[in-house]
Length: 205
Figure (tube, rainbow, N blue to C red):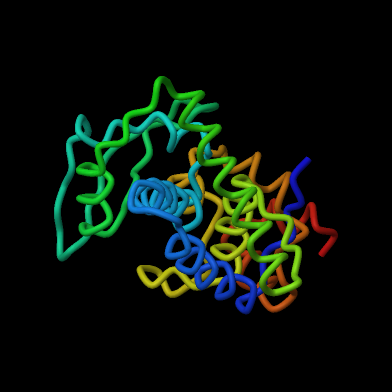
């Protein structure tokens, strides 16, 4: 099972820096465009908490986007729960994904390409920075959930709830409580008692 331990902010910054460097190190224009396309798809996983297979099946020229202040949202289906969830990306990135011209044979092929990109990115970081972050596409999804559990929802002024995160990831709140209760920091406990008592109770508080 993929480690659910979140990346530190320094590690996240390193990943972002390494992605840019790895893409820029492409030996030719075709490989550069391919890496850029895969990096953009990885960003949806990393910044949106989506599953690898969910992102792999997105047909960017077929979705019905909503544009707002340089940001694009569109509806998609969560893989396991089949719930309708929103996906959001910056408009420039959406345009790049839509116009890249990369068409994969099928969803499995797209998933393998993203997975391979992450594996090579991890190797790149090891070789250049002598750090093994054990990167895996699903690790970024875990990290997304962990970060939200520890941050404030600007719309409510309280910590994000499992319901908030469920609407982003498609996971049922009960599933989130089961797998991520150990990531709730002590400073959140009092707030969580009024928001999501199950997390607090199951965490032994």
